[in-house]
Image (cartoon, rainbow, N blue to C red; front, side):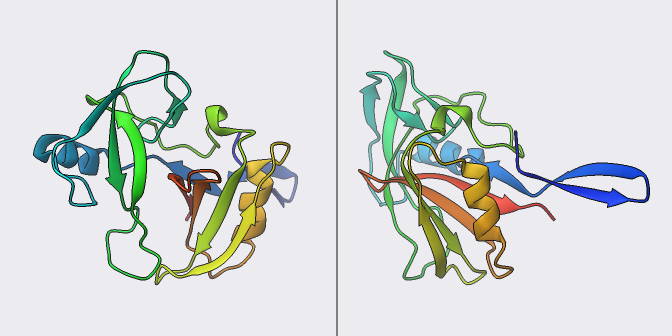
Length: 171
């Protein structure tokens, strides 16, 4: 479930989500698939057959063995800047159902050691947190969003440094 805040107004209690999770934008992925040119300027997409367990950034789940994937260079920030890193990510070779933007953390990525990096409106890193397998992502997200200057959070794989997903505030 997504992180929620309980708001008590008189005798009524409501639960308001505090964040939503986004996969890679489908329109950017379609452009990359159609042109064969990724965010790193590479031409010709590197097709691979999944071994199983690869994190898919198009639908935010792990791949099953033998799925057709492409390995692309992706830059989550569309504007230049010192923190606009480009790195490798796996996505389905063909358009998939994607990930329905939701106010919950992807189940397949729970328990992974990751770096949560928070960014301000300019795209500068203003905080971060290294998670352990037992950490609850929602608690980390809530702690980082306690800083009102945080506009978005990116998570990255610890071992390979790859971008995983983006988390935005609700509202």
